[in-house]
Image (cartoon, rainbow, N blue to C red; front, side, top):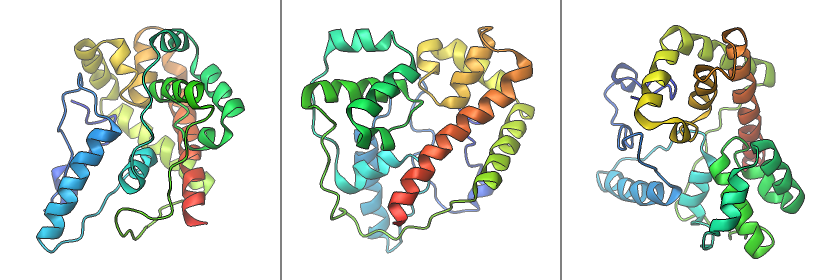
Length: 232
């Protein structure tokens, strides 16, 4: 169901190479970093057991960090605080994180409201998001970094989004929205969130592509910052 907006790898693109953790959840179900770590650990062991080298591809650095260095220290949810935070805008939440924990602000997804709220819950308890010991990864890793220049990346983003819209992204998001509702839709990724705003009449069709391009570019800049630290 989440094919176009996620740019899911097609069977043809797989070219006979086994791919994992695709189509493993219903869109109504959540999938946490903890879930990913359990699944990835199992698959890494199975793939190594066959004498093969597992390759992890993607840009969700929080999940990679969790796999390599362990999950953050557990903090009990604060229901009242969470309720108040949920009423605020993403920009407001992000600004508070920048002020109270600049280190975490550099690494968090600035467009993921659920993670912003959780970060502020942890900051409220500990004063900042506790830093994990990242001196030794749990697995030996060889990084292959694809980090195109700014202008090239912006052009690629716009080309990809244009193709997605031409391929039926609006109809896909419309179907997903009917199935999961607006709250869950906003958690499924930027493309689903922004197109959902258009479907609710909160954005015009004329500005949809530019809005999508801008939001995805902001997220890409955040990823590039993580890559800079990785390669330093």
